[in-house]
Image 1 (cartoon, helix red, strand yellow):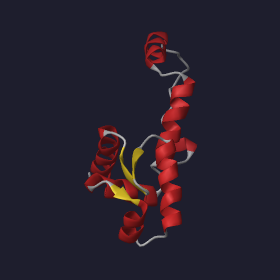
Image 2: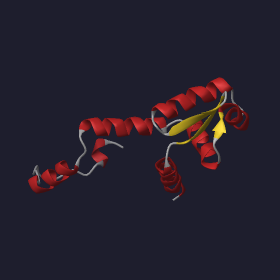
Image 3: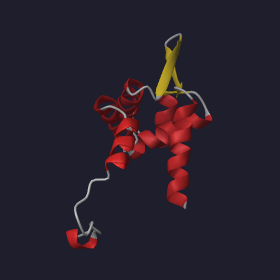
Length: 119
């Protein structure tokens, strides 16, 4: 979009009441940075596929790799990122490690994004 396609004010005027009201509701910069980082994690289709898999069942790396036709190493790498971002959790059963969604928020975020692209 070119600059001339954006509507601008005909004259320069700051609406202090609106600016102040919005500023009071804005999260602090650290929280906005963290929010942007979490959305970066959602920006990878492999991670989205893994999250969809985990919507259906708790699974180990081997099963996820088989289902998505990927290497265990590639899945482990993506699961590490998802776990660091607190989107998935794991539990150990003997030598096996099973992964699941961290909480219901993860599914809500994905569902809302999917609903948005389908509009």
